[in-house]
Structures are given as structure tokens and as C-alpha cells.
Amino acid sequence: MIEVTPGAEIVDALPALYIRKHKALVVADAHLGYEEEAARHGVFMPRFQLARFLNVLEQALDLVDADRVIIAGDLKHRFDGLGRLERREVTRAINFIKERVREVIVVRGNHDNYLPILKDRLGFEIVEHLILGEYVIIHGHKPLPSEARGKIVIMGHEHPSIAIRDSIGTVGKFPCFLRGILKDSKTRVVVLPAIGAYQTGSKVTLNPSTYLSPVLREEVVLEELEPIIVDEEIGVLELPRLADMLDFM
Image (cartoon, rainbow, N blue to C red; front, side, top):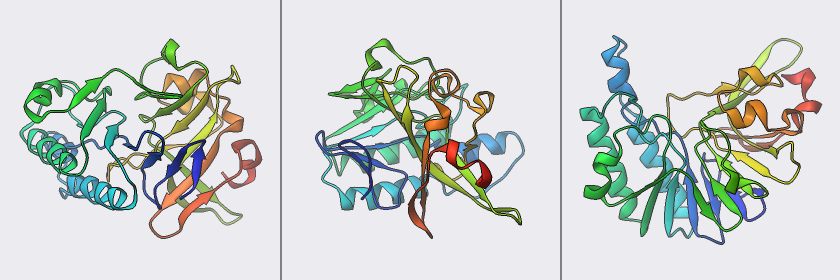
């Protein structure tokens, strides 16, 4: 497993991060119920978002010694309610995780409206951000909390992916982790790829306006960001910082 930041490593070639000291497995952006919401708008697609989520978690939990699973936001997808599919899938997901670990924590994301309805019945925790020693876990849709300054920030929301090209054209688009520093030079950041099957990702660029998160748009030194591809076929591939990849992006 590759250490993406001190004490935290990518699990196999999965969109999952393991923090050793705290025995914590961290994933982000499951967007359960996505297919139901798409169907409401006339777009019908196969329902395998939950299957993908459970498969990744099962593989990861088989490989690490985890006491807790932390979901760094957007466990569910629908903004304006809690759909029937969402309710069933969130219930299945939480129950599955609780069979394997003692604690489930959701760091609230912008899609997690109405999720507190299920919190007490299913027995999981919802927080705005989570501090674990030197790590601060956020979703990333809001400005950075003051408690995160000088620490290692782990976040989701962005669904990063990188398009690699050669002289002929684009070779492929791959989900990736991002690691970098903030402009204060004291705060490190790790951005998680989305675990959701349909959340293919925002393209990593050097243009701040292309990013969803205010943390990336306003505070991260984009030139210093280092993508780490995670892909079932090619495995884990560490790339140079973005400033050195202009000819390949």
C-alpha cells in the first residue's frame, strides 16, 4: 500500500484511505440512490451504485485492521428528500459496515440532507467535520474550518480524475487521489476519489475555476498537487506534480 501522507495509505488500488494510528478506513462520495434520482428526471440506468460501494468496502476491510469507517460526505445523493431507494441502500450500507467495525461516522456533505432521519435508528454518527489527532476530515464543499489549519486535511467532494494524453490524443481518464499543500505552507491536503460508480470525476487542471471545492479553488497550491491514479487495471500510479505534467494533460 502506498503512503499518500504520513500515517495514511491507499488501500490496494481502491478509492479508500487507511489511517493506521486511528484504525480508520476513509471513503467519500458514495451517492447512494443516484439511479433513483436520475430516473426521476427520465434517465434510466443500471442499479449498481450500492453493489460497487459494498464491494470496495469489503475488499478494503479484508486488507486492513479497521475499527471505524468514516464516510467523508455524500453518502446519499438526493438534495431535496430521502428517496425510497436511498433509504433502503443507506440502511443496507450502514448495517453492512457495522457488521465489520465498531463505529460508523458520516462527515456531512452537501448531498446528505435528510440523512439525520436515519441516524438514531441505524446507529451511526453525523458530524460537520472530524478531528483525529493531526488529521481533519471534511467533505470539502465549504471553506476550511479554522481547526484544520496546520493539520492534514482529508476531503472528498471534488471526485478528482486526471486525463492523460500523448501526441496522438487522450490515452485515458482515471480516478485519482490528490495530495498537496495549502498556500499557508503548513497545511497538507489529500483529496479522495469518489467511491460512487457513476461519479466519474472532475478533471484535474491548473485552472482554479474548474474546481468544485472552495478549498481547491482558493487555498491549494495547484501547481504542487500530485495525482495518484487508482485503477483496477493499471493499479496505483504516482504521477509528478501538475506543474511538471503540462505536456501530458
